[in-house]
Amino acid sequence: MGSAVGQVPEYCKMITEWVTEVSTIPVLVKLTPNITDMRYPARAARAANADGLSLINTINSIIGVDLDTMKIMPSVAGKSSHGGYAGPAVKPIALHHLSQVASDREVNLPISGIGGISTWRDAVEFILLGATSVQLCTAVMHYGFRIIDDSTEGFTNWMESKGFSSIDDFKGKALEQIDEFGNFNLLHKTVARIDQDKCIHCNLCYIACEDGAHQCIDLTPVNGHYKTEVREEDCVGCSLCSLVCPVEGCITMVRVDDGSNKKTWNELIEEFEKEGKPLTWENLAEFQKKHGIVIH
Image (tube, rainbow, N blue to C red; front, top):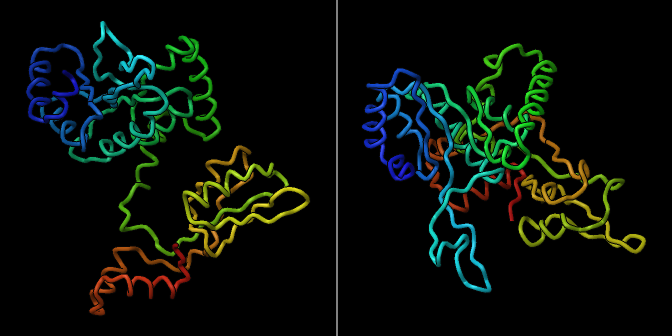
């Protein structure tokens, strides 16, 4: 019911108004992530005089199918349905929706952040992206209420180390970094570098790069094992190798341009228009060649 209502801003506004007209306590509207753009129901909640928002609710899902019985799990007398998925896996989705709503000037309401928060670090991330408070549920189910004490201690220590005395000192501090792709610097160059002293020669970076990315890691036979080496001229800085590496700090992403040159996609398109150049593969390839951009 909540998911269905939350997908229609008009219903969200109508039901919120029913509550705010008679409520004697603050009203927070919990928003569903099962929608393309959460800003619209958030605006509707504000228009209905909500005091704040909480987000995200759970994500519609089917948990799996038993391969022996071929029944959907969980099964209730042979029947099943869609359920709400929560826990650490939904955190990136929650952060996305949070950043959208928190940066929307038409909303401008306190937000209680929810979704995959398990540690004090998670809580800090939510507040850096605009949350005023946070909520934990799945983590408490796993570890009990003692996790609140652990999180509070870590949170407090982090604030003190940064010199913050209030949540307001850093709430939303990361929001200004979010921008559209068209404003990214196309000449920004980051490459992967492998610390050979830390490498355990599992070759996971090579496999990931060879089969799923840009084929810019070479295997060189050395003393009975393979040495993994990055061809930096071909590396596009996707960081897939560093993500699959099991050794912390073995693969680092290093910026190699000096920052003196800048050209965004929007600036490039504007430049093409001024010069009367059509947006073709040939003209893009000319730009790439000029600036040493190699993408296979």
